[in-house]
Image (cartoon, rainbow, N blue to C red):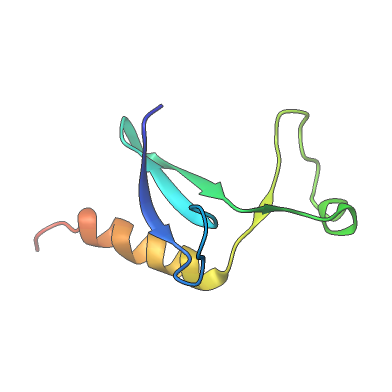
Length: 77
């Protein structure tokens, strides 16, 4: 899978985290990069499978990613 960054937290000074990516070969798939959850928060996830994880990112970063995605995939009226 080839990823392309849609949005990154504007306040992040080092690295690319947190960020949201879209799969270039399947634009219906997004990947989120962020900080690991602490154990108490991770314990609240509903039935995560062995190959699943969750990360935290600011909601503003997710909103920017969705706006970028929609702008790229707008359909003419």
